[in-house]
Image (tube, rainbow, N blue to C red; front, side):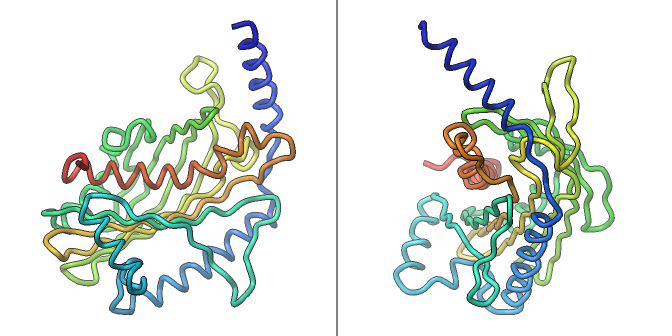
Length: 272
């Protein structure tokens, strides 16, 4: 017990030191280039017969993925967009790129899309990661929404975010959407009378940008739901990897996994 106050003190001191990150124009520009090239690849895919990521896997890899999905499991993998043969990096930042798929037996594509569009209920469906949610504007299949995220991995972070979402229905059996963050502000002292928003891009840098890309395909007696996420965060400062490393590196994957699991639970029930 004697050492615990010291650990807490070190954690608080380190967390304070982390709070000096700044989203630089060069970092943001690198992310924008990454997004542009990624969306170019997506545009090409949407025009092809292989609508889902798993359908472009080869041989045994696809068979294994399909078997896992039919057992109620997720299939998730890290991706990397390149400019030709060149790796794309963000100076003073990190780009996190993941794709995940879940199968919803007995669910129609309309039901899956409706759940994702019901932003006013997201705080209930995706709790505790989504602490508050609200549709700010709706124009046909275009939405402007507010989401308050709560994430914890060694340390806890709360963020107020706004997003623009556009849904497309090219055929009765499928749909896709692109959701771009337009404002992300970390909340200091969340849940206390001293709660306040930090200036966007001038915070601890755990999430500066977030884009998610959804695809829905009805077949095999259910609906496949795929989500591809792009997150921009700060890099890991020297000496603080033990504190923020787990948050920065694992939260994007964990959040995607959580979101897909909650989507399945809301429409089908918990996996066996």
